[in-house]
Image (cartoon, rainbow, N blue to C red; front, side):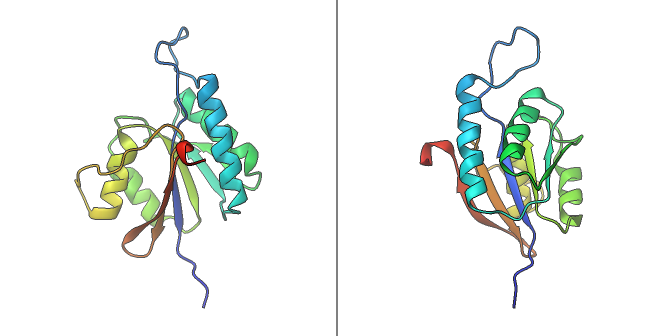
Length: 155
């Protein structure tokens, strides 16, 4: 009997410039390199993935594009509600309605709050540290379960 549970990949954007000249933070060279290494590792896992969603922040878009280059079957889409201080409630409703495996590229503190709420219920305290470029995989089994977590320091 096959397992058709949805997988949700949550990704923190790569290391970003802390003092941007343009006003919009972008990935540092180190950040882009780490995302590329994570993308290569992730692609080797042969993940079934249809869509990559990212916030409207440039650093998240850059991260999603690098990941997308290693995952040609996945389409990239900018989505509202994924910025650092957004309330995850709308995202939870949306994700719970999804049937396909998806990836969300987002930010601190949004990601740990979203993760805790999916795993432990509404208004749970954040319990995961998302290092830059980290990927956490959750599996929807009613309820959600942590499948794995990986970050660049493990490569």
